[in-house]
Image (cartoon, rainbow, N blue to C red; front, side, top):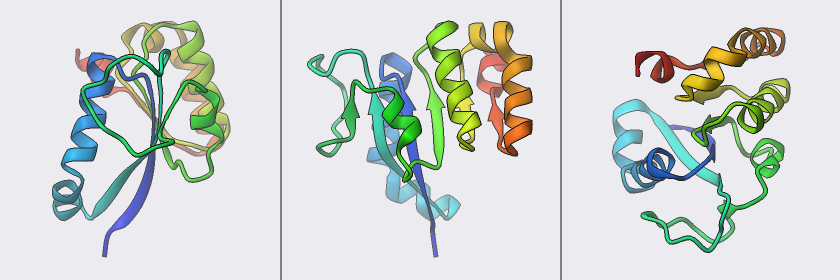
Length: 135
């Protein structure tokens, strides 16, 4: 039996878009290998009209970044929008809402890492950034 995990993604540029495509296209394969049914529930983007290299169900794509954090069906937030201030504020809000966060944002981890780690510890959730330090 698979465990369903609702995923919210902040940013769908080159890296975020590739992640969305992979999670959607390989959902069954991922579930078979891991026992985790990773369901992309919401993808926050700057421009809803920009052509994308992936297809998601109606209502998944949004320009309301806060909806990723506020959606009770999202269990995990992935931040791939880049930058420090807006991304950091959204990651902090997600952590404070009790949602684990994964990021590959080197600038964010370098500039706000200690505060975000502390917020994760206070909320008892994970703040994972190995992709940022490994890059």
